[in-house]
Length: 373
Image (cartoon, rainbow, N blue to C red; front, top):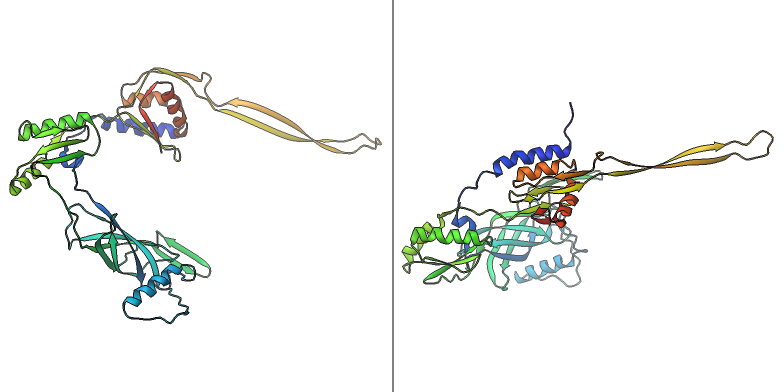
């Protein structure tokens, strides 16, 4: 039984998926495709110390900022260290804390944080993060972080051998930070602005029509392909009910722009259902150059006082692994299944498809945007 090549298996899976892709996408809620302008998360960052490590902390001779941070921290607690003293704090590590403050977060709300080693600590397992202020881009403190670090990895060493599972120098603290300050949220009195997560005039028109059918014409006023203004009630109680109903409005999504994603590292080729292929001809074949060197011994005749010499017989051959007729005509494809079937006619591997698709794009036969990642 003839075995399927790697490309055949890849194309077979793509054709099977095409059967599902061809089904019209279901309607999406407005809350899933848009955001209220001004209501967005904010990134927080801080520098702190993790203590209580089992000898796996920073080597302070190589990371002097760790000992400086410790001296400054214990100085605020009234402890004075004599100058000139050498301390090896193997149970302490300098870390960076990152977090995301949700939109409309209020003081007292707990958020998760990520703790990452800044020095040369071997592991943060079993450590405790000391109180650390978290700042936003404006330099203001918006949260305070503290707690026990959770590490999902594990490590063991002995006799000069060591092994680790997952990452030991970074972990998380669930609900490890408390919001101390809220970001001011300005809510317009008459209109709010909705921003689509993807700029699309067709989707914007459908969104405005759906809102108008639900609340009346003139409620939604499109600004461009991404933003539209929605008239909201002035009464706060009615506004909350209005927003709850607005978020649940369903909209039929529009077809995405034709796009092909090429991964040059793995050879993966992914395309959406909007990709079209015009009739074209492609020549595909692999040239193989073989150079062989055969050693030969030249033996002189008897009593000729000659010397035995070793020579080589070099041969070079060029062969083609492609089909006898390498120029293949590709019919036009109006559906993804047709495009995949046409590309399968070339008999190329997924890595070869990268250069073939780029050539088809340059020739004007591929109606899609190519993105190489």
